[in-house]
Length: 388
Image (tube, rainbow, N blue to C red):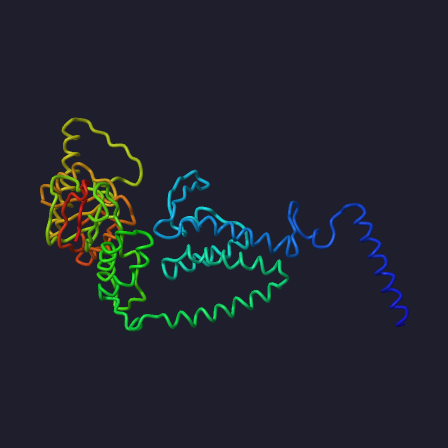
């Protein structure tokens, strides 16, 4: 039985080999080629696979290398939508380039992790990775294996960590995140690489803004609590820190300043109510039309009066504001602001402590916010609304 099984196995292997040779002779794919989709490319070995990956990584490093430092050059980028952008920020460049090569994507992920963790140093990660990979190419051509090169880099990494530990400035473990001077000193290098010559001024401004919104636990710091508003006119030295929010729009109406004001925020427009379904109203005389208009105005005035009775002096709307509603707001001495962006409206609610109301009605005590001042100012030649 054993001999019979062995003969059958030999005969079966012979038939398989003959079939494989027949497939090769006909030009049909076999082996790994038969499992991949049509139009694929298969590379193997140092010359085909490894060196091509190294060249892709070095090409990515060459793109961002010239943008490093305060004297780095800007890049003109055009994305798939045709949008133009000029920047020297490595994170923005990598996002707009849309890298698809698998090996280069690993470098992009490493740069993104660095940017998410620290907020800076993405260009350094790409440049350092490109140099390490470029040096590995010469070692591969000299006959070293990839495993030997990786082992050498791991030993070099351990040595670098030991050296870096010896360079730590004394007292860094006792860093106080609420001390403006300490924060200013530590962010100096990061700001200098982007705004060389203005770093002394801007670092103090940035430190004041960050310390003002720093929570009890500095590790839970929310970057969205510090916003940058760019205004035409003036220069970098005209920048200032506002403990509140700056809106690039002016109030509706002629009331341009309020102090110690209660705030009501509406996520919808401020106007007379509309029915959910279409309807037809038949007027038989001009008196009926006038009475209908008077009733609508009276209902609108009643709503505005109810808002005024709560002590609200500042009304913020996320939609359009009707002329008649604005008229009654002016009569009751209330300032009216329109914020079209839902994100800005959300930030305004966070600053004032108010809750957005989805219906045009008088707010409750829990829904009312408070601001110390809200006024129109001219900064850098542009009129803005400053809320503190």
